[in-house]
Length: 540
Figure (tube, rainbow, N blue to C red):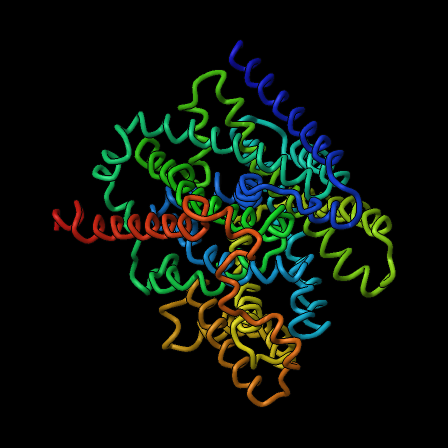
């Protein structure tokens, strides 16, 4: 009885503190559109890094990724470890231009590099995808997760998430989102650690688990594997990875609100280190659950089962707060980014080009409210049926990732990329993805054994890349004065002159990035050794 009461007190206290921090951050923010949408360029590196992680994590991790690890194993950790590459691309290629160019949104970049049509296509596509897959579906998934762990009605959870996220996001903009994200990052990491440690204590530790269940720690599967083919997994970063980390407004936006370029870069690196840590909190528990609770009818029940069985009385409130943190931070980030893209990329250029800052902030708040209402209604409608929510989220990413990553990547790295080619690829990519998924990989004998969304996405990516190069060579290039300001140069590798002197040595982004890369490669090397020359090899 006491444990249950303590859980509720801890959970309620967390929710109250979360809203108060959001309102406090809103009052500290400077006025104007830049203050509302980009936090007045005031965010320090730790808030940026924590916010990136908090915005990224949702029930897709605590339920879907744990369930995938329960069903298959450690291979799903590459969805986190592989971020060392895509965050490096953001750090050294995209981020310097975004910051030095004063970019508000990712669609705005496409207009600067190509034309307005590209901007509008990307803005509309982003809004639709965020509302459906990143808001409505995530609210539904979170509601089902909390119902499974704590018996809370999904309807109450969906309404509660919408009200709590909206209470500070609509009023405070990015500053409120980033600072509450940082609190939520701390809470979700603590909650995740409690469950992971409790599970590992029951199995004798991580090394004992690896030797008890070595088949669960494989990271390379045959290329004909229906779920995790090695080629698709290791080329994931070229399409989905670059799209998600380098061109996604709700990931990049907190970097655009940095107080300095050094803070933005160090925030990305900090997020990279946390990505290395995350599999130990959301993948290893799935393998622990497989060892302790074999034969679950649904792998997605693994995390709720662990929480009910292993978390001591009184500490479940912290775990509940951690799950709520993942949901709130993700939802608030997407709401904020959706209102930013709607206001800056659609409303202002199409309806009110001469809008004042005060008017834009007002539109941003109202659009946040309306977008949240639409997602709420859609989530309640989805709750009436049974949908594979996590497969839906992954599939949506595969559909949009390839053409968008090609257009952004060539736009920054290749001077000859043209507006005509980019426009064609954005129109061509989505129906071509449908052709690849529903025709080519089903009816072409050569491709049928490799039918998997990862392999399909790579085929779409390489096709879009080749087509964009060919079309660019036969169409009129952009003016040199436009391209020269955008295409990557070696100057992007270094901090601005005014920041270099005080950010050398141990404060150098290059130093910490090198440590991140070495750590990631060392972990990959160990896991490959473990699979091919460790216990599995010794038993063959």
